[in-house]
Image (cartoon, rainbow, N blue to C red; front, side, top):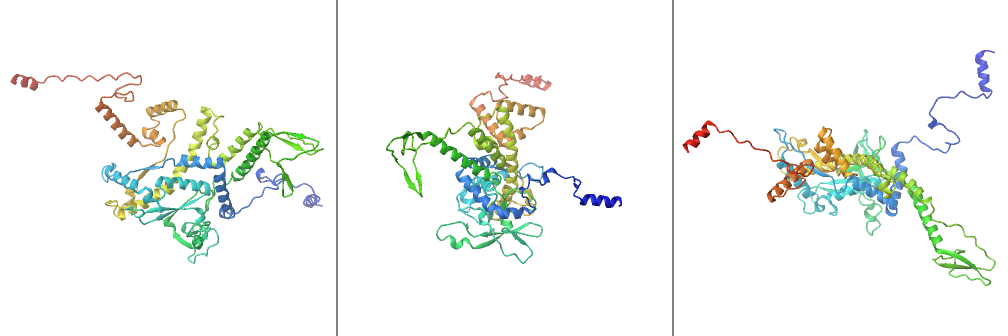
Length: 509
């Protein structure tokens, strides 16, 4: 028998096969046999789950305190009171800002941003729309902003916004168009995956009011140029958005049940005082429901038992010492899933100090800045460009040369909200040192706090002029008082040396 035949005989005899190299995370053993995975596309996974995830997330936000606080934290940190704008149109010569034109654009934008003009229903101003948009993205996974090019509420610019929940988009099968496009969960895309149109219900499919159901199933096709579809893309080829609570939904649901059980156990422990056994036996307040005897427990009540009955009262020490640590551990996981800090979701600051609070806030603010950038690029800038075009075309904003070079007039600076310092004294000193060393500019420091350097300087100039007019000297004016509070020395003015012509004038005089 040759060597090769001997090896084959050895392998067929049941000898262990040689091990192959691979990843431990991909090994299939008795410990990972229940780990179910698939190679489906992102849209296939979303289609089978996103409606249930969306509805469960909304229920949690309605009934769960921690889910509601997480959503409120996202709104307040990403949008706050609103993302401000400042036009940055420059003159054609010299490169300086056209202050007159920029002020005119800003005034018209502020006028349009009122709820009567910018919202089709006349109920939300622009900052309210900003907050509702980021709330819907977090809670439902996506939101649709329809650009309606007609005036509302007496506005002079024919442009307004309609906010559509994700329920409006048709989830079921839509007849495929004959132009070669494909409709994926209501979004019509071309062969490159670029959205071409959106297929909406004319009204909310879940509207239960009388007369609304007759229009619920009517469908309309809206071009993609008139719709802003806002959602966070997590995988290539993704067409629809998923709720940010997706990974925390089950945990929050179980946590709510656990908390309810602890509360009921605590109530029972506080209400029941003891049992009394008598020869006659009495039952007070007991009733039979569905074949089961129900006894009402109230504070300070002693219960009578039937003759011969005994009671074994379990230890109802609730809540015990493990309740609070367990809740903190669960809420940390929930906060991580949503993208907030534990302190923001739980409102529990008892376990933090200056260092940990600052580290947590800085880590969290990086997430907020990413979301602010997302909103500016995908929400604010497209809306501003569409509004500017309609304002110019309607004559509300007369701008010469817009048709030739519209990009020149689309330059704008968006100023999202900033955050206050954890320890103002330490951080102000750090900013002051960074500016003096050239590591940062004054504009960087002001913008990090959500302000604008130009506005700050103009306001400061107006303040100092008013102080000089009233003869008031404050220690906040570095031109008058130094850091120690002492008055700055007045610079000496040298007396000019008389010239030959001055002396002649004196003689002539």
